[in-house]
Length: 93
Image (tube, rainbow, N blue to C red; front, side, top):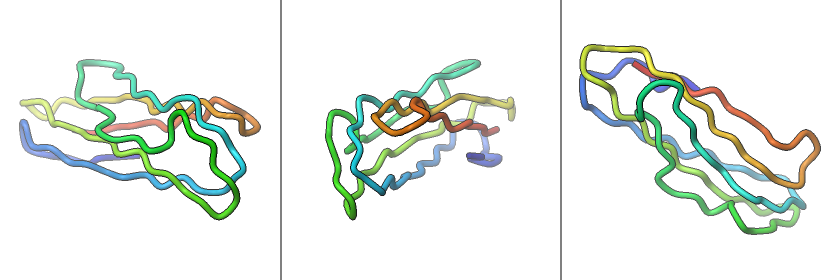
């Protein structure tokens, strides 16, 4: 997921909706490859079990570093679904 190019210290948030059950979510964590530009700001998934037809959300934030430096990170979701954990690459500048 690319947060795009932001001016220094500007912020952007994206909410990801997860649906399709049944599934139990253990955790949704953000890791940063360089710096701390990415964060998890809200999470209605972790620690909950969802049945078919229900959904939850994870909101991610990105704060652009000064100097338009490329940043990367990963959202890792651990759950009971096949292939767990699932990962989503994060990038922004």
